[in-house]
Length: 460
Image: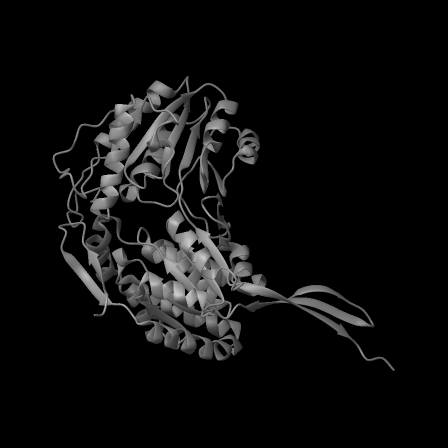
């Protein structure tokens, strides 16, 4: 019997979409077609590839009126926020704008005897495994630069956002990208592993859980296939005594709660200098109490359900365990909290790092706030984590922020902002957050390989 992937809508628990998975033979055929198409795609002039990719991006934008409610049904984000096309387009446009320089030959030197240079050449077939929380933006991070660089792409999207890859592939094909150059697939875990282990791909980019990233690396072991990963996070914020308090509270709590807390770089723990702590907590609680939990299609809703009941159950368990260990909750259960996917946002105080809610990734609308008395204490707490994606520092002093940033084990340091992916900067992490880097010039370098040329001239 053919296995079927089912997207269960968090709105009401119904099956919103389902698709049959490919057999191993059919999946291998997809990879073969991608490989056969790659050389002719890479042979096209770079401006032509850029134009076709950006036409595909625009075609996705033209679908936005259909995409926004579709996302609400698949993963619960309120329609009032309008989807992801702004960031989707920003990231692709930036990568298109820097492509010529990023992919240009590196000139090493030329004299009467030798010419030496390094080319950036595409890997070949890039396999993109994308997550459900920002399904369009996370996918385009790799899809656009991979295609621009001359790779072909096979995209496998999360079951929770089952229709996203299908829409993207259709949009790009309609814009003129050859169908074998960018393909969407529905795969089981076993077939995915078999493809990677069988050298079907030349590079794998995975965004998801730590366990998922480990599975990708195990599948690729011994194949020498490159694997880039962006995995879990437990991103901290640190509010110093000279911070703009109102800006810090507004940004950090939004960073903790937006998208029902389901953000890769969402704020999951906050450390506040003792001089601002009470005022910070008071303002944070007021913001959280003001959220409107409800049906994502309701224009008044500011927080929809979490994408799946099991995600909400884990957050509830973290909160309950923390309370049993002495943590204090500040938000009363909202009327719309059904004990399922609809979850009351929560602020926790009297928390410690012995609690799971301050150690494990929550990926939901909860944040713990701790009082600190010095930079050294804050740095030690921020580094007391198995993850390292971003950290948000709040101060009037850029030199102090840079000095602290140098000591934090993280991929990105923010000062006076949070929860934003700047495509001009490398999106990367350390520790159990994974390895590799997307976007920026480094993103192009990771999606290509260096090829050196040492050309001796014939002299008479």
